[in-house]
Image (tube, rainbow, N blue to C red; front, side, top):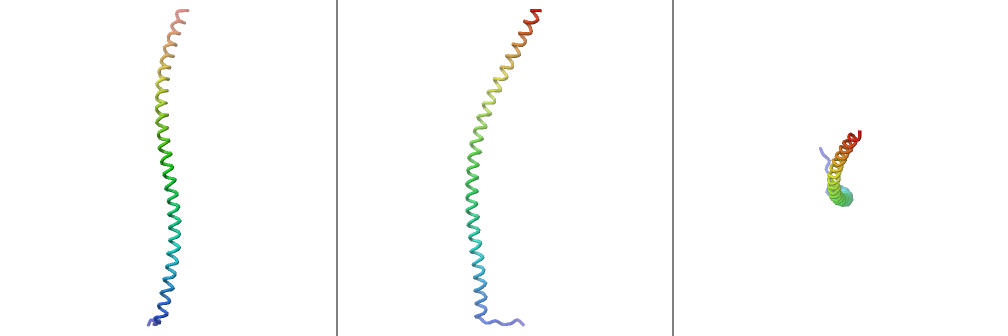
Length: 96
């Protein structure tokens, strides 16, 4: 049969266990506060990175537009050079 314990002993054991639980919960609370602080810091960094990515995206669009402009000029210059080379070839043939 199970041993009977006095009410006082039972109450003191319950109080001891409750005290242990409270201490553990307090420890967890401080850890959660620390994690919350770290999370806030990470969230701020994500916001900074998002702003930087938006800025870089805009710069990439500008550079892309400039590249397209340059590509058009290069194509025109290449066509002009080809035309000039053809004319030089004709002049050289006439000279011979």
